[in-house]
Each structure stands twice: as structure tokens, then as C-alpha cells.
Amino acid sequence: MSKLPQKKKELLKNAQKKWLAFRDAESELSYALDPNEGGTLQQVSSGSFAYDMLKKRVTDLEGYLANE
Image (tube, rainbow, N blue to C red; front, side, top):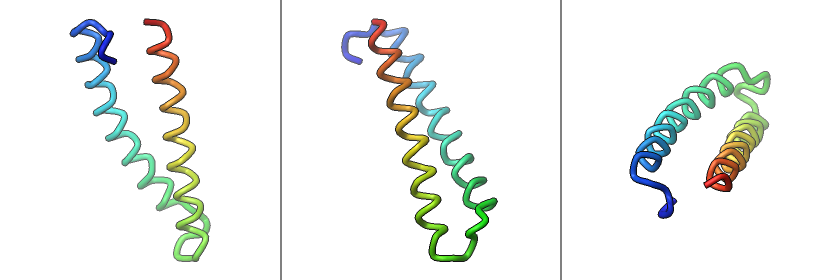
């Protein structure tokens, strides 16, 4: 990120802040709709969901930065 021009750094920071808010809202929804609600598997499935979201975000960010 240190190689990005200032304007692109600001755009990336802004996008990341918004993605974090999206991640939290999406995780809350996924947790509420989980068919394992209240069971011991709910923690496992919500952790898996969070991991998958994060993995996709990292892949997206790597792609963006690879083009710079």
C-alpha cells in the first residue's frame, strides 16, 4: 500500500472501512439465520462464514494491489 498514490490510499481506506461494516452486518445476519442457532455447531458455522468472507477480501485486495 505504501506504493499507492495518496488518492488511491484514501479510496482503499474508505472502501476497507465500508467493507468492515458490511462484514459485521453480514455476519450478524448469517448468525441470526443459521439453522444451528443455539446449538454447539453455530459457533463453528459462524467462524467458517467469517473465515470465508475474510479469505475472499484478501484475494480481492491482492488483486487490486497487483495491478498497481
